[in-house]
Length: 147
Image (cartoon, rainbow, N blue to C red; front, side, top):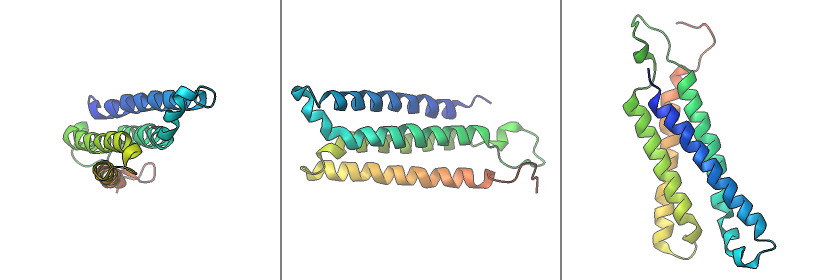
């Protein structure tokens, strides 16, 4: 088992952390450097990238990696984990949502097109979260439970 999509989720979450930290650092500098005052308008993006892009995606990647499905008579370990196709669908839905929201939300107050693109990104994130819940819910059980 290669755990391809899980590693992709974890690495992508680290990229969001770095971008979020850089935006936060620039926001801090903007208190004294007036030329950076525009960056403070990205505070929602900063928070979103760290909380959703990093934390939530890290949790999803680790959970899908660490919690196999209940054992069955099927001995093939590949059958006990989410398929690569399902994992990549989750990855792309969730990350397209994060990217669209991050890019367009700062402009959504002033531009109706940006508002709808950001809204679409939010909807994709919600779909991604519910898809993740559908994938992970059957895996949550007491340790040693085989029924």
